[in-house]
Amino acid sequence: MKRKTAHLGMLLAVALICSYIESLIPFYFGIPGVKLGLTNIVVVWMLYLIGAKEAFLISILRILLAGFMFGNPFSIIYSLGGGILSFIAMLLLKKTNRFQVVSISVLGGIFHNIGQLLVASLVVENFNLFYYMPVLLSAGFITGFLIGILAQELIARLKGRL
Image: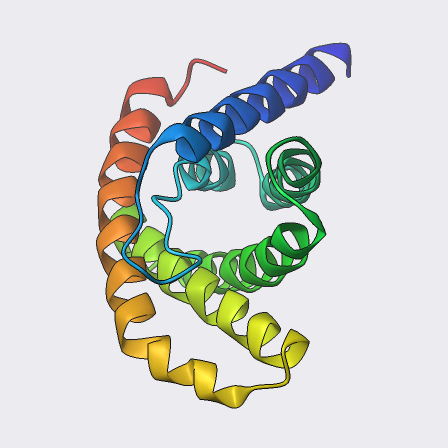
């Protein structure tokens, strides 16, 4: 049990480091919420090699801790909406055993942006925000694809080393 807890602690630390690095990268396209999604590498990797419960726990803890350290209450709310919806979508797609890591990561990126957009539209009570959907879906696809390639490589290299 101690070993598993230590693994989870280290993976939470890696996810937080990814969040910090992402906060330093000037990646802005004029639309709030578009990010690289570096921490999704950890979540996807965990989903494949450790387990869904653990991956979900690290995802939620990372969102909360990173929000308190690098963000604000609104960033936590938006990230939780995106992170939870993204995780559910990735988990359901993975359970079909019909898709590869990259496809699942792409879906995660897309659904993360959809979740954030839903939360934002509810918070500001303005559904005109959905006009941003095409840009956010494109960004989710591109970043999900890039993160999926990295996660796939990590899974291949680290499988069996736990």
